[in-house]
Image (cartoon, rainbow, N blue to C red; front, side):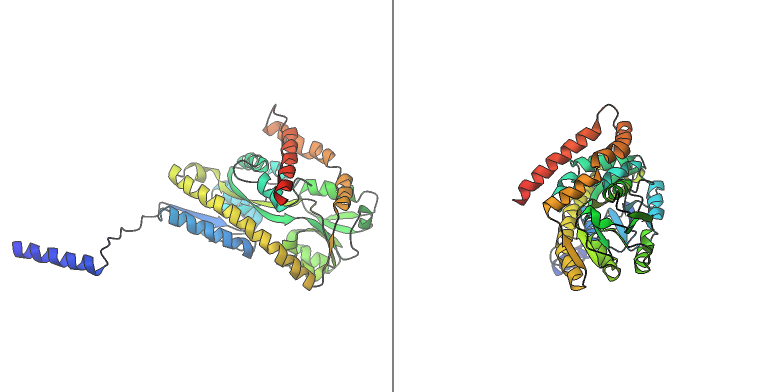
Length: 357
Protein backbone atom coordinates (compact mmCIF):
# COMPACT_ATOMS: atom_id res chain seq x y z
CA UNK A 1 0.00 0.00 0.00
CA UNK A 2 2.83 2.37 0.90
CA UNK A 3 4.52 1.70 -2.45
CA UNK A 4 1.26 2.34 -4.30
CA UNK A 5 0.69 5.62 -2.46
CA UNK A 6 4.28 6.68 -3.17
CA UNK A 7 3.79 5.90 -6.87
CA UNK A 8 0.65 8.05 -7.02
CA UNK A 9 2.43 10.93 -5.27
CA UNK A 10 5.34 10.72 -7.72
CA UNK A 11 2.96 10.67 -10.67
CA UNK A 12 1.05 13.72 -9.44
CA UNK A 13 4.29 15.58 -8.81
CA UNK A 14 5.48 14.81 -12.34
CA UNK A 15 2.20 16.12 -13.80
CA UNK A 16 2.49 19.31 -11.72
CA UNK A 17 6.03 19.95 -13.01
CA UNK A 18 5.05 19.09 -16.58
CA UNK A 19 2.21 21.63 -16.52
CA UNK A 20 4.55 24.40 -15.44
CA UNK A 21 4.01 24.24 -11.71
CA UNK A 22 0.57 25.88 -11.90
CA UNK A 23 -2.85 24.79 -10.80
CA UNK A 24 -5.61 26.29 -12.93
CA UNK A 25 -8.98 26.71 -11.25
CA UNK A 26 -12.03 25.82 -13.28
CA UNK A 27 -13.80 28.78 -14.86
CA UNK A 28 -16.71 30.04 -12.77
CA UNK A 29 -20.12 28.90 -13.81
CA UNK A 30 -22.12 31.58 -15.65
CA UNK A 31 -24.79 32.86 -13.27
CA UNK A 32 -26.30 35.66 -15.34
CA UNK A 33 -26.86 35.80 -19.10
CA UNK A 34 -28.12 38.98 -20.74
CA UNK A 35 -28.95 39.92 -24.31
CA UNK A 36 -27.85 43.34 -25.62
CA UNK A 37 -29.84 44.48 -28.66
CA UNK A 38 -28.82 47.22 -31.11
CA UNK A 39 -31.71 47.94 -33.51
CA UNK A 40 -29.58 49.50 -36.29
CA UNK A 41 -26.24 48.95 -38.04
CA UNK A 42 -23.69 50.92 -36.00
CA UNK A 43 -20.24 49.61 -37.03
CA UNK A 44 -18.26 52.30 -35.17
CA UNK A 45 -20.16 51.91 -31.91
CA UNK A 46 -20.06 48.12 -32.13
CA UNK A 47 -16.39 48.28 -31.17
CA UNK A 48 -17.37 49.91 -27.87
CA UNK A 49 -20.20 47.44 -27.33
CA UNK A 50 -17.96 44.43 -28.00
CA UNK A 51 -15.44 45.85 -25.53
CA UNK A 52 -18.18 46.35 -22.92
CA UNK A 53 -19.41 42.75 -23.22
CA UNK A 54 -15.86 41.37 -23.07
CA UNK A 55 -15.02 43.39 -19.95
CA UNK A 56 -18.12 42.24 -18.13
CA UNK A 57 -17.30 38.58 -18.80
CA UNK A 58 -13.62 38.94 -17.90
CA UNK A 59 -14.05 41.09 -14.81
CA UNK A 60 -16.86 38.90 -13.47
CA UNK A 61 -14.66 35.83 -13.84
CA UNK A 62 -17.19 34.37 -16.26
CA UNK A 63 -20.08 34.69 -13.81
CA UNK A 64 -21.90 37.12 -16.12
CA UNK A 65 -22.12 36.99 -19.89
CA UNK A 66 -23.70 39.61 -22.16
CA UNK A 67 -24.30 38.61 -25.77
CA UNK A 68 -24.49 41.41 -28.34
CA UNK A 69 -27.17 41.24 -31.03
CA UNK A 70 -26.29 44.03 -33.53
CA UNK A 71 -27.92 45.26 -36.73
CA UNK A 72 -31.52 44.76 -35.61
CA UNK A 73 -31.20 41.00 -35.12
CA UNK A 74 -33.76 41.13 -32.31
CA UNK A 75 -36.08 43.52 -34.16
CA UNK A 76 -36.56 47.18 -34.98
CA UNK A 77 -36.37 50.00 -32.47
CA UNK A 78 -39.93 50.05 -31.15
CA UNK A 79 -40.06 46.26 -30.99
CA UNK A 80 -36.76 46.24 -29.09
CA UNK A 81 -37.98 48.97 -26.75
CA UNK A 82 -41.06 46.91 -25.88
CA UNK A 83 -38.86 43.86 -25.35
CA UNK A 84 -36.65 45.65 -22.80
CA UNK A 85 -39.62 47.24 -21.06
CA UNK A 86 -41.30 43.86 -20.65
CA UNK A 87 -38.09 42.06 -19.69
CA UNK A 88 -37.96 39.83 -22.76
CA UNK A 89 -34.64 41.53 -23.66
CA UNK A 90 -32.35 42.60 -20.83
CA UNK A 91 -30.70 45.66 -22.40
CA UNK A 92 -30.51 47.66 -25.61
CA UNK A 93 -29.37 50.82 -27.31
CA UNK A 94 -32.54 52.92 -27.42
CA UNK A 95 -33.72 56.39 -28.41
CA UNK A 96 -36.28 58.07 -26.08
CA UNK A 97 -38.86 59.13 -28.65
CA UNK A 98 -41.64 60.97 -26.84
CA UNK A 99 -44.31 58.50 -27.93
CA UNK A 100 -42.36 55.89 -25.96
CA UNK A 101 -40.66 57.96 -23.24
CA UNK A 102 -42.60 61.14 -22.33
CA UNK A 103 -39.57 62.67 -20.59
CA UNK A 104 -37.47 61.89 -23.64
CA UNK A 105 -38.44 65.28 -25.04
CA UNK A 106 -35.50 66.70 -23.05
CA UNK A 107 -33.10 64.41 -24.91
CA UNK A 108 -33.77 66.18 -28.20
CA UNK A 109 -34.43 69.71 -27.03
CA UNK A 110 -32.80 72.13 -29.47
CA UNK A 111 -29.61 73.96 -28.49
CA UNK A 112 -29.05 72.05 -25.20
CA UNK A 113 -25.52 70.95 -26.17
CA UNK A 114 -23.68 71.77 -29.37
CA UNK A 115 -20.35 69.90 -29.26
CA UNK A 116 -18.74 66.74 -27.88
CA UNK A 117 -17.29 68.46 -24.81
CA UNK A 118 -20.70 69.77 -23.79
CA UNK A 119 -22.21 66.34 -24.43
CA UNK A 120 -19.64 64.57 -22.25
CA UNK A 121 -20.35 66.94 -19.36
CA UNK A 122 -24.14 67.07 -19.63
CA UNK A 123 -24.71 63.34 -20.22
CA UNK A 124 -21.85 61.87 -18.16
CA UNK A 125 -22.77 59.01 -15.82
CA UNK A 126 -23.89 59.47 -13.09
CA UNK A 127 -23.51 63.20 -12.39
CA UNK A 128 -24.42 64.90 -15.68
CA UNK A 129 -27.61 66.94 -15.48
CA UNK A 130 -29.09 65.39 -18.63
CA UNK A 131 -28.13 61.89 -17.45
CA UNK A 132 -30.12 62.50 -14.26
CA UNK A 133 -33.12 63.67 -16.26
CA UNK A 134 -32.96 60.74 -18.70
CA UNK A 135 -32.63 58.26 -15.82
CA UNK A 136 -35.89 59.62 -14.39
CA UNK A 137 -37.53 59.49 -17.81
CA UNK A 138 -36.51 55.87 -18.45
CA UNK A 139 -37.49 54.86 -14.90
CA UNK A 140 -41.06 55.68 -15.90
CA UNK A 141 -40.79 53.01 -18.62
CA UNK A 142 -39.38 50.31 -16.30
CA UNK A 143 -35.75 50.87 -17.32
CA UNK A 144 -32.41 51.99 -15.86
CA UNK A 145 -29.85 53.97 -17.90
CA UNK A 146 -26.30 52.62 -17.93
CA UNK A 147 -24.84 55.36 -20.13
CA UNK A 148 -25.53 57.58 -23.13
CA UNK A 149 -24.12 57.44 -26.64
CA UNK A 150 -23.39 60.50 -28.76
CA UNK A 151 -24.26 60.59 -32.43
CA UNK A 152 -23.14 64.16 -33.08
CA UNK A 153 -24.85 67.45 -33.80
CA UNK A 154 -27.83 67.84 -36.11
CA UNK A 155 -27.65 70.08 -39.13
CA UNK A 156 -29.98 70.64 -42.09
CA UNK A 157 -29.47 68.95 -45.45
CA UNK A 158 -31.40 69.49 -48.66
CA UNK A 159 -31.33 69.24 -52.46
CA UNK A 160 -32.30 72.80 -53.39
CA UNK A 161 -29.85 75.37 -51.99
CA UNK A 162 -27.25 75.99 -49.30
CA UNK A 163 -28.81 77.12 -46.00
CA UNK A 164 -27.02 80.00 -44.24
CA UNK A 165 -30.00 81.92 -42.85
CA UNK A 166 -33.65 81.15 -42.00
CA UNK A 167 -34.83 82.76 -45.25
CA UNK A 168 -33.01 79.99 -47.15
CA UNK A 169 -35.70 77.57 -45.92
CA UNK A 170 -38.10 79.19 -48.40
CA UNK A 171 -40.64 76.69 -49.78
CA UNK A 172 -38.57 73.65 -48.76
CA UNK A 173 -40.36 70.42 -47.87
CA UNK A 174 -38.47 69.15 -44.82
CA UNK A 175 -38.77 65.67 -43.32
CA UNK A 176 -39.36 65.60 -39.55
CA UNK A 177 -39.91 62.89 -36.91
CA UNK A 178 -41.68 62.64 -33.56
CA UNK A 179 -38.93 64.62 -31.77
CA UNK A 180 -41.31 67.45 -30.89
CA UNK A 181 -38.68 69.89 -29.60
CA UNK A 182 -36.83 69.77 -32.90
CA UNK A 183 -40.10 69.97 -34.85
CA UNK A 184 -41.07 73.14 -32.98
CA UNK A 185 -37.61 74.66 -33.46
CA UNK A 186 -37.53 73.96 -37.20
CA UNK A 187 -41.08 75.26 -37.53
CA UNK A 188 -40.12 78.49 -35.78
CA UNK A 189 -36.98 78.89 -37.91
CA UNK A 190 -39.00 78.47 -41.08
CA UNK A 191 -41.93 80.65 -40.04
CA UNK A 192 -43.04 82.92 -42.87
CA UNK A 193 -40.81 81.24 -45.46
CA UNK A 194 -43.37 78.84 -46.90
CA UNK A 195 -41.39 75.87 -45.59
CA UNK A 196 -43.49 72.77 -44.91
CA UNK A 197 -42.78 69.73 -42.75
CA UNK A 198 -43.56 66.13 -43.67
CA UNK A 199 -43.49 63.14 -41.33
CA UNK A 200 -41.59 60.32 -43.03
CA UNK A 201 -40.36 57.14 -41.27
CA UNK A 202 -36.56 57.03 -41.03
CA UNK A 203 -36.50 53.74 -42.93
CA UNK A 204 -38.16 55.48 -45.90
CA UNK A 205 -36.10 58.69 -45.83
CA UNK A 206 -33.57 57.69 -48.50
CA UNK A 207 -36.32 56.91 -51.01
CA UNK A 208 -38.26 60.03 -50.04
CA UNK A 209 -35.23 62.20 -50.81
CA UNK A 210 -34.46 60.30 -53.98
CA UNK A 211 -38.01 60.68 -55.31
CA UNK A 212 -38.27 64.31 -54.12
CA UNK A 213 -41.16 63.54 -51.81
CA UNK A 214 -39.17 65.81 -49.47
CA UNK A 215 -36.39 68.27 -50.25
CA UNK A 216 -34.38 67.79 -47.08
CA UNK A 217 -34.17 66.75 -43.45
CA UNK A 218 -32.17 67.19 -40.28
CA UNK A 219 -29.28 64.75 -39.99
CA UNK A 220 -25.75 64.32 -38.65
CA UNK A 221 -22.47 63.76 -40.46
CA UNK A 222 -22.42 60.23 -39.07
CA UNK A 223 -25.88 59.42 -40.39
CA UNK A 224 -25.19 61.07 -43.73
CA UNK A 225 -22.43 58.48 -44.25
CA UNK A 226 -23.91 55.47 -42.45
CA UNK A 227 -27.28 55.82 -44.23
CA UNK A 228 -25.65 56.93 -47.53
CA UNK A 229 -27.78 60.07 -47.56
CA UNK A 230 -25.01 61.88 -49.43
CA UNK A 231 -26.20 60.00 -52.53
CA UNK A 232 -29.56 61.81 -52.46
CA UNK A 233 -28.58 65.17 -50.99
CA UNK A 234 -26.59 68.13 -52.37
CA UNK A 235 -26.11 70.53 -49.43
CA UNK A 236 -25.61 70.15 -45.70
CA UNK A 237 -25.39 72.92 -43.10
CA UNK A 238 -23.44 71.88 -40.00
CA UNK A 239 -25.63 73.76 -37.52
CA UNK A 240 -25.68 71.87 -34.23
CA UNK A 241 -29.36 72.74 -33.73
CA UNK A 242 -29.73 69.68 -31.50
CA UNK A 243 -27.66 66.71 -30.42
CA UNK A 244 -28.16 63.08 -31.34
CA UNK A 245 -28.12 61.08 -28.12
CA UNK A 246 -29.21 57.51 -27.39
CA UNK A 247 -29.12 55.50 -24.19
CA UNK A 248 -27.94 52.04 -23.24
CA UNK A 249 -30.87 51.03 -21.07
CA UNK A 250 -31.52 47.95 -18.92
CA UNK A 251 -34.78 46.37 -17.83
CA UNK A 252 -35.37 47.60 -14.27
CA UNK A 253 -36.11 44.18 -12.76
CA UNK A 254 -33.06 42.64 -14.41
CA UNK A 255 -30.92 45.42 -12.94
CA UNK A 256 -32.45 45.26 -9.45
CA UNK A 257 -31.97 41.49 -9.30
CA UNK A 258 -28.28 41.69 -10.20
CA UNK A 259 -25.97 40.96 -7.23
CA UNK A 260 -24.13 44.08 -5.94
CA UNK A 261 -20.69 42.87 -7.05
CA UNK A 262 -21.93 42.21 -10.59
CA UNK A 263 -23.59 45.64 -10.66
CA UNK A 264 -20.18 47.11 -9.91
CA UNK A 265 -18.62 45.12 -12.75
CA UNK A 266 -21.29 46.33 -15.20
CA UNK A 267 -21.00 49.95 -14.04
CA UNK A 268 -17.21 49.99 -14.47
CA UNK A 269 -17.49 48.44 -17.94
CA UNK A 270 -20.22 50.97 -18.82
CA UNK A 271 -18.06 53.91 -17.72
CA UNK A 272 -15.20 52.66 -19.88
CA UNK A 273 -17.53 52.06 -22.85
CA UNK A 274 -19.01 55.55 -22.50
CA UNK A 275 -15.58 57.20 -22.80
CA UNK A 276 -14.36 54.79 -25.48
CA UNK A 277 -17.47 55.29 -27.63
CA UNK A 278 -17.16 59.08 -27.37
CA UNK A 279 -13.56 58.95 -28.61
CA UNK A 280 -14.61 56.66 -31.46
CA UNK A 281 -17.31 59.11 -32.49
CA UNK A 282 -14.97 62.09 -32.29
CA UNK A 283 -12.47 60.33 -34.54
CA UNK A 284 -15.21 59.25 -36.91
CA UNK A 285 -16.40 62.86 -37.29
CA UNK A 286 -13.24 63.91 -39.16
CA UNK A 287 -13.37 60.78 -41.33
CA UNK A 288 -17.06 61.23 -42.12
CA UNK A 289 -16.58 64.91 -42.99
CA UNK A 290 -13.75 64.02 -45.39
CA UNK A 291 -15.88 61.26 -46.95
CA UNK A 292 -18.82 63.61 -47.50
CA UNK A 293 -16.64 66.21 -49.20
CA UNK A 294 -15.09 63.51 -51.37
CA UNK A 295 -18.57 62.33 -52.38
CA UNK A 296 -19.45 65.84 -53.54
CA UNK A 297 -21.76 66.99 -50.72
CA UNK A 298 -21.42 70.74 -50.25
CA UNK A 299 -20.73 71.37 -46.56
CA UNK A 300 -21.77 74.74 -45.09
CA UNK A 301 -20.04 75.84 -41.87
CA UNK A 302 -21.89 78.61 -40.05
CA UNK A 303 -20.16 81.39 -38.18
CA UNK A 304 -21.11 81.93 -34.50
CA UNK A 305 -23.11 84.99 -35.58
CA UNK A 306 -25.02 82.97 -38.20
CA UNK A 307 -25.79 80.26 -35.63
CA UNK A 308 -27.08 82.90 -33.24
CA UNK A 309 -29.64 84.00 -35.85
CA UNK A 310 -31.03 80.45 -36.07
CA UNK A 311 -30.96 80.14 -32.27
CA UNK A 312 -33.05 83.27 -31.82
CA UNK A 313 -35.44 82.24 -34.58
CA UNK A 314 -35.98 78.88 -32.81
CA UNK A 315 -37.61 80.64 -29.81
CA UNK A 316 -36.26 77.98 -27.44
CA UNK A 317 -37.83 79.42 -24.28
CA UNK A 318 -41.36 78.94 -25.62
CA UNK A 319 -40.53 75.31 -26.52
CA UNK A 320 -39.26 74.59 -22.99
CA UNK A 321 -42.45 76.06 -21.51
CA UNK A 322 -44.70 74.14 -23.89
CA UNK A 323 -43.04 70.73 -23.98
CA UNK A 324 -40.62 70.31 -21.10
CA UNK A 325 -42.04 72.18 -18.11
CA UNK A 326 -45.28 70.12 -17.80
CA UNK A 327 -43.35 66.84 -17.59
CA UNK A 328 -40.64 68.33 -15.36
CA UNK A 329 -43.18 69.73 -12.90
CA UNK A 330 -44.86 66.33 -12.65
CA UNK A 331 -41.65 64.28 -12.45
CA UNK A 332 -39.90 66.64 -10.00
CA UNK A 333 -42.73 68.29 -8.04
CA UNK A 334 -41.88 71.54 -6.30
CA UNK A 335 -38.27 71.60 -7.55
CA UNK A 336 -38.59 74.02 -10.49
CA UNK A 337 -36.42 71.56 -12.39
CA UNK A 338 -36.80 73.36 -15.72
CA UNK A 339 -34.93 76.36 -14.37
CA UNK A 340 -32.37 74.09 -12.69
CA UNK A 341 -31.64 72.20 -15.92
CA UNK A 342 -31.29 75.39 -17.96
CA UNK A 343 -28.93 76.85 -15.33
CA UNK A 344 -26.84 73.66 -15.27
CA UNK A 345 -26.63 73.62 -19.06
CA UNK A 346 -25.38 77.20 -19.00
CA UNK A 347 -22.60 76.09 -16.63
CA UNK A 348 -21.81 73.18 -18.94
CA UNK A 349 -21.30 75.54 -21.87
CA UNK A 350 -18.89 77.67 -19.84
CA UNK A 351 -16.94 74.64 -18.58
CA UNK A 352 -16.76 73.11 -22.05
CA UNK A 353 -15.47 76.37 -23.50
CA UNK A 354 -12.63 76.31 -20.96
CA UNK A 355 -11.76 72.76 -21.98
CA UNK A 356 -11.44 73.80 -25.61
CA UNK A 357 -8.98 76.63 -24.86
